Image (cartoon, rainbow, N blue to C red):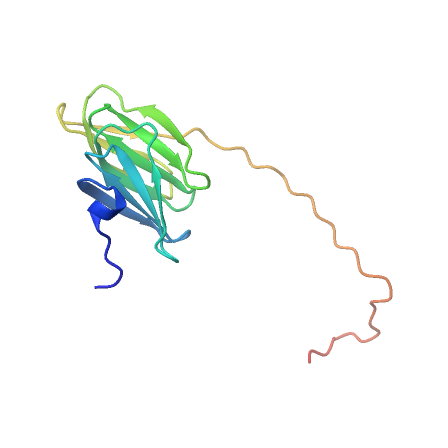
Length: 155
């Protein structure tokens, strides 16, 4: 097995769930009893710990399109959203049922699905839409960079 991680050496305790962002090559591990999430950089196996907003993280799901990571916190009865660009966190309520136990993301619709264990319900979370910022561009030829042929020759 390649590059095994030792939970005792890394400070993880009872790793419970894992998901991967194939775009950023980051791996997210929910550590249930440590009340944190470990982020593994897939290029060099270095680790960072995200420790804000967790209580019994039971599940993790990655949206590779938005680079958001969703963590179901059974003990806190909520979902923590990690921004994959800087590992900042935000808490999101899950609705009527306590103990979110599983989480899944549809990267096409950006909807998050959370199973609430004790209430036998599923909560659907729709993130707020983002506003596109227009990008205005112009192409200006360089001075003296002209051709007299109709079809340029590539070398």
